[in-house]
Image (cartoon, rainbow, N blue to C red; front, side):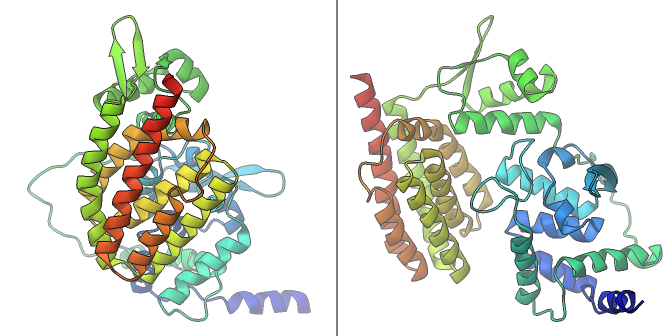
Length: 392
């Protein structure tokens, strides 16, 4: 009896997030960290426990609309129970898909250090940091998020709904969640960008559909979109082939990248915060670790995140999309060349990253763009040099 009484008393001491205003404050504070935002929205819209959330994979939510069910593991027997997707989760999941380009089998909440699931202690510390950031006291991590879900579930419907606005004079189409076609497209795009599918390789829709466990229709649509972005060439009776780049192409792309990335870095340097500096320091450490292990994929992934963390600080989404498209064009060649070449020069990239970090910390745009230009130019020279060596 005493044990039950203590448990009940402890449960009563757990506080929910006090108000919808505080919920909005937390969402605003983490909106640029889309993984964190998705975790927060899932927790307060579903009431799912932390251990259940950390087991979710992209395919569990893929293609769902608001109000539709997905399933989470419940109990020690591994049974799966239904949960409904909420409007905020629906929205943040779409952003998550577009920004991270995950595979269908990827965990939603991966550790920063690899492909393993985020650990429960790390997730708990993450939630606590959200509360600290907005000055909320008396919170109990995931338990407070679940309590918030319980509180919202018990609200009368009239209290949940906002005052009705007049109907607009125009009509709009219903926005859907990412479709199977979108996910197939992202999976193929990622395979090409990371050179799992190499330049010159032929794509057979039937074989790809079998590998992904889907029909050929979304595969064919994805191939058409990739052809439009100049990743593939489709010829009658021959099918689709991944395009190859020449040295001339690489140099032209470098010229365009400098025109786009240097202005983005200039604005980012002016807007840089301590949080940004700490993040790019961590990503540079991952890049160095990849070099030391001669793990090209790890190094190049960290390098990409390092640069894009900076460009996001410019707060120019159209420019960011243009930069991303050019990175995607050259990325397969970087992955291929770096896999076949040891990191002979320990200063390649690393020394320039350190200078860029110093410039970001000092809000010094001149220093940032000077070393960024050097970094981009020398990495392109490296790849073209390896291409020449491989031809001889």
